[in-house]
Every structure is written in C-alpha cells, then in structure tokens.
Image (cartoon, rainbow over all chains, first blue to last red; front, side, top):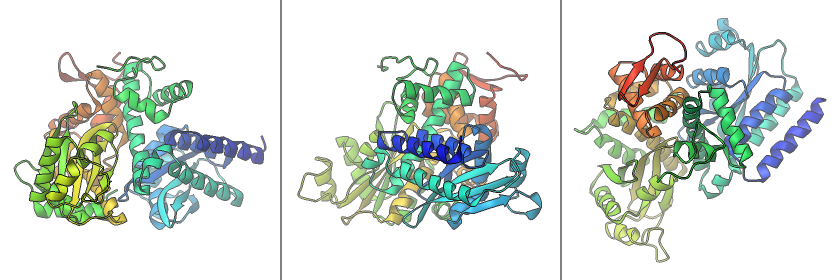
Length: 245
Length: 247
C-alpha cells in the first residue's frame, strides 16, 4: 500500500476513534502500532509525565515486551528523558556505546537489536506532557517526511489525552494525565490477573482484554477495572459474572 | 526518575523525622510542600471504612474528625470516587458541595478543602486532604505538588502496611522507578493465587521482598516467570526449585 494511502487510512481511523467515547490507553496503543506501519521504524511507544515530572510508559507498539524493558531503563536516563526535559525532538540519533550518552540505556537497546532512536515531545500550551519514541533496528535514517508524520502523531496523542471522556470531568491537565497514567497501572494489574487465571503470557493477557473490550463495546480500562474489582472473571474473559455481593 | 521536587519532599521528610507510627512527617511535609494551612491523610479499608492516619495540626485534626463522623467531605469523596475534589469556598452562601461538612468546616476555621486520592492503579489506599484558611483555587504548582505528594504517600502507606521501614522508600525511589510494571503485574497474579485484592497482594509482595531481603522488582520477576507463587491453602510462598511451568 502506498504510504500516503496508509497515512490517510490511519488518520481516519484515529479521528473516528476520537469522536466516540474511547479508551485513552487503547487509542494510544493503536497509535503506536500505526506509527510502526507508517513511519520507517520498528517499534514505537508513548511516555507521559505524572504531575511532578516522573515519566511513565503508557502505550507501545505490539512489540511490547522489549519496549517496556527499554522504557524502564529510560525512566532513569535515555532519549525520552532528554526529549521530555528539553522539550526538543531527538532526530536520527545513532546508538553508540562509545559516545558515552545514556550509559545504561544504550548498551541494552543495542543488545535488543536497536540501532537508532527518534523522539518527539508531546507539547501543549508551552508545557511538555510526555514524548513519543521511535526505535529502529535497521540501517538508514528517517526522512524529513517521516519526522513530520512523527510530529503529527505526537499531536494526535496529545489530543487523545485531552479529549478523553473522563477528562471532561477533570478540572485540570494534571488530572487528565494522572487518570491516563493510573489507567495504565490498572491495566497492568489486570494483565497479571488474566495471566494467572487463564495461564497466558502477558501479551496474550493484554490481547484478551482488548478483544473482550472490542466484543463488548467497552473501554479497555473499564474491562481492567471490572477484572480487578471482581465483577469480571479474568479466567474466562467474555463471560460476565454477577457482581460479587 | 527522582525529580527535583521529589528530592525536596524527601529532604523535608528526613528533616522532620518520624514519630512512633512513622507517619507524622507525611502530613506536615504535605502541608509545607503545598504551602497550605493543614493536611490530613485518611486510609480506606477494602470494606470502604475510613480511618485517619495522620494530621498536620489541630485544624486538620478537627476537620478529619468531622469527616469521619459525617462520612462526607474531601477525603471521603476523593477516596471513594478516585477523583480530585475541592470546595474552594466552604462558607459560600450557595449550595455547598458537602451539605453537612461545609458549614461545620468553615466554623472550624477552614475556607477551602481539597481531596486527592491516594491510589496505585486499582489499589485504593485513601486520600490526602488539604485545607486552607482562605477561599480560592490551588495554583498549578500547588496542584502538581499535591499530586506528587499523594503518590509519595501511596508508596509510603504501602511500605508501612508491609512492615518495611519508611526510610527504605527514598532509597527505592532513587534506585528504580516506583512504577515498575512488573510489580503491578505480579500483584495481579498473586491476587488470583491468593484470592485477595490487588491492594492486599501489593502489600504481601512487599512484605515478602523485605523479609527475604530481595529487591521488589526481583521478586516481581520471579512471580511473573512462575518461579515463586503464593499458595493460599498453605498461606505461604512456594519457590519452584527448577524452571518450568508449575501448572
């Protein structure tokens, strides 16, 4: 498929998502997946900052395990941390252990097969709220058009957080960010429950929860909340139990 | 990543020291860092019962007692609803947010009250209440500091409930992210293994890590890879001697 066609389809899909009541984590996961398809990168992910500045991973492309691992190292140092702190993009940075930059992050990223990184800040009214990260495991640099598309995705990600339904009740950007970040933690807690109850790995557990949300036209976070509060059996997703007395 | 503000909070906590319960400094640091006239922390049990953990001063004590009696107010609403709540003029003539609480809180000397949920994912620990003697909204910096303080309190309460010293907290937040997802995933697994809440599982994992002198993330990894599990019948942790699926 031509890149322009793919880009248009992706934008229409994201716009459709943002019109209805949507789940912010689900939309950001879709966005990360589409980044990989439309920008010349191998993995993508979104990090947001808690009010107070702590960065946390909120969504990543389907190659999630490796990316989450990288994000955990990033919480101490890395392109995303620098991009967030400076509010400036990092474009086509070639990973090299000898340059001394990010001594913990760089060797681990190279070990996982990545050769270069790009990072675009998510900005709103002069404040940086997070960053969109891109990891490449092949030679070659992002073209100017790729970087422009990446910036566009970062703006869509920002809008996804601001326009979210729960945000309508939120008084401040801080509350919107806090809700999105806490959603991610609830989803991780629910993933653990599904893994244990359904004997699946973490990626499968996440896929089951997303599948259940789709089938029942519910938000991913709502499904996660139902699991952790005991109203939805993690062992048999798609089977709803009566609320526990 | 420990931010500058987080370091400010920890140095204040270290300065203030701890009382016998290890909690006093949390409330006074919360009031000081947000530059407000009082702070209180309430805990919520799995059965939604609210108890006071600490109060920074007499005003906070009076308001917390009032709230526990009335079952209405910023802490109650923030912890049950999981949202930030506020009444920026408790003495306003129009319908107050909290019908019974507002006039009595105003009579006690407070003009604005704010409630921030203290939570880690689905684990609801309680709320941080902040009070001011003058009406009005919090500034952006105060709001941001209150969120940060609520997140420190969530981790501190987790430490206290799991019996590990609160001093470990600063070290832990320095050394690694307190938001390591493996710990949350492991808590979900242990919740199913032991038929308990995710909150109880978070406490249990921390207790076990502390007892075994293990890093929290290391224990989480073992739980996720099924090398360690919690057995609800034996009420104890089972370590699998060899690798492989225990099922």
